[in-house]
Image (tube, one colour):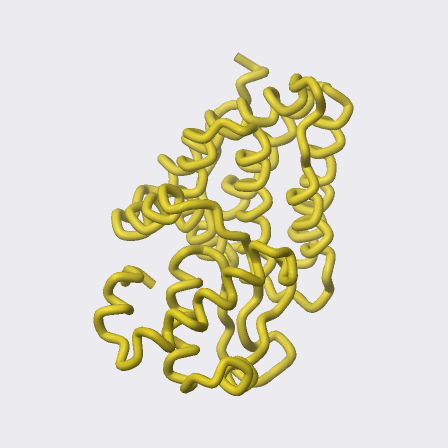
Length: 251
């Protein structure tokens, strides 16, 4: 989806009702009443609860998806609807996400940038004193343990986990850059699904690698944290696209 929130507001038949839904969901996220990995009530339930039309609910959900806060799945099964994948993180990050989504950076460039940024983030988190707050990152890992997630939902939470690590570094420029790359990261991860022989084996491996990265950070082992996140990012890329950049530890 490449449209911007401005376009949605301009074309909405009931902008005030649209905003009511958006403000309600955002307030629930900011207050902690809703968490990553949880599902929003359905369109009918939100429409009834807030006293607005279902078209206004759909408008708000589209904006929330563009901003990277939810991921929607069509259908009527248990995985249908909208799943929370992040909490609001500021206007600058949202703007960068939209810019990146529109520009369509090459996958190789996104991966190389990730390797530069995220290996530095992992090492800095491991070296930080006092230890960084990884509460949000760990909550996302717990959400990824759910057996009810489909691959797209899992990968959306995966991208959110990497952003949470960047935000834990408290470097606003790195966090904003990672937020801007998020749609590209999730996009190439999803594009690679068809190249996987066994999604369950891959997702199990990704879960172990995520936990290993967090364990290295908590152990204040910067070298291991750097290597693990490099291997994690480049490993998925090699499995689904082309050979990754060399490990910095081997240079």
